Amino acid sequence: MSWLLPEIRVFESPASRWDARWKLATVAASMMLISAIDDWPPAVVGFAFAGCTTLWARLPLLVSAKAVVGVVLPVAPWFVLLPILNSWAGAAEAALWLFRLSAVACFGAMLIRSTGIPRLLEAASALLVPGLLVRVAQFAYRFAFVLTTELRRLRIGLFTRGFRMRSNAHTFQTLGAVVGGAIVRSEARAERVAQAMTCRGFHGHLPRLTPFHTRTADVLTTILFLVIGVSLACATFVPQSWLNP
Amino acid sequence: MSILVRDLSYRYADGRSALNRLSFAIAAGERVALLGPNGAGKTTLFLCLAGVLRNQPGVVIAAGLDPALPADRLALPRKLGVVFQNPDEQLFAATVLDDVAFAPLNLGEASEAARKIAEATLTRVGLSGFGERVPHRLSGGEKRRAALAGVLVTSPEVLLLDEPTAALDPRGRRELADLLNALPGTMLIATHNLEFARRTCTRALVLAEGTLAAEGPLENLLADEAMLARHGLV
Image 1 (cartoon, rainbow over the protein chains, first blue to last red):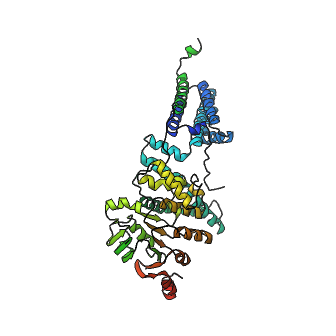
Image 2: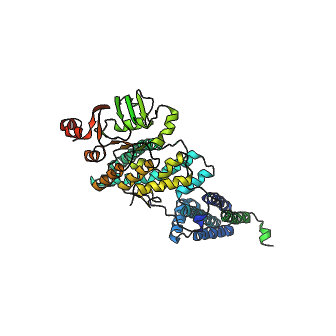
C-alpha cells in the first residue's frame, strides 16, 4: 500500500476551457437538481446526461468508473443493499439512489478532472465562498502531499527498525505516536509557513495569478446544463395523467 | 548601512533566551556568513530582521527600514527577502509559477506583469519551463531554487538565506554558490557549511547562545581552529 497521495490529472477538453466559476456554479446546481429527482426514468436520463459530460470532458472510462465506485460504495449498504433486501418497492428505490449517486459522481469527476483542485478553489473564492474556508482548503491540499510524504518516511523508518503491523497494543501505541507526532509537527510547520508568507508580503488575501474571463460559450454551456437539469427535476413532478392520457 | 542591529534581545514564550544584546552592522553590498551551532539564534535573528518577531528590546534596521514600525513593515517584503531552511515551508502555492508570482501580486503588480517577472526569475535561477510543475514533485535542489526565485522576484536589496545548502549535493551547492555570487545586493547567509561560506562570503559573524562570539574577515575566522572548535563549527 502506498501512503503517497495520487496526483489529480487534469484532462484537456472543451470542458477544461469552460470558465471555472461558471462551471463550479453550474455543476453544483446540476448536482442539486439531479438529487431532487424522485422518479427513476428521469434519474436514468440524468445519469446518462452526467455520463455524457464525462465523455465531453474526455475522461477515460476507468476514471469515471472509479469516481462512481468511490461515491456509491461507501453509502451502498444503507441506500442500495438494505432497500433491495426489504421489498420490490425497495429495489426500485435502490435503483433510483444508484442512478442519482452515479450521476453526482460523474458530475464531480467531470468538474475536478477538467479544472483541478487549485483552480476550483480559486473559483470558489471568486464565487464569494468565505475566504478563510478557501485558504484552509488550499493549504490542506498543498500540504496533504507533504504530510503523506512525511508519513511514508516515518513508515519506512518504523519498518527498518523491525516494526510490523499486528493486532496488539504495541502496534496501536506506535501508530498513535506516529500520527500524533505528525500532527504536532504540522502545527509547527504551519507556523513556519505563516512566517514565510508574512516575509513575502501576505496580508490575509491570496492573490490569483490567472484571472477569470467569461466567454459567450461559458454562458451558453451553463444555460444548456441548467435547462436539462431543471427539465429532469420538473419531470419528477409531472402528473402521471399527463404521461398516460 | 544595509543591516544595523544594536542590543537586540529576544526571549521565547517559555522564557528561553534566543538572542542576548546582539549588535553588528553590515554595509550595503557586503556578503556575510552567519556561523554558529544549532540553536545559536540564527533563524530567530532572521525573523527579527524580517519583522516577523517583534516587540523585542533593541534596534533593528534592515534595508533602511525599521521593522518595528507598521508602515516600514509593510514596505519590507519589497526590500528584504528571506529564504527559509526548508523550502517545503516556503513553497505553498499549487504550481511553481503561482508561488514565485505570490510576492509581486501581494505587492500590487497586475497579474500579467507578475507572470512575466515570475517567468523571468525562474529562468534566472535555471528553472525555465518549471512554472506549471507542482512543488511537491520537485527535487530538493529544484525546490531550493524555486524558493530562491520566490524571493528574488521582488529584487530585494537585502537577502537573508537560512541554511541554503541543507539537503543539497556538492553540485547543487556549487551551482547555488555561483548563482548567489552573480546576484547584486547585501547577503547574510546562515550556514554550517564552511566551504560554501568561503565560496560566497568575505566576512563572517559567529553566533553562540544568542551573542556575537566573533566577527571579522572570513578567512581569518576560518584560520582560528580553536575558536571554530569551541563553537562546534569543525
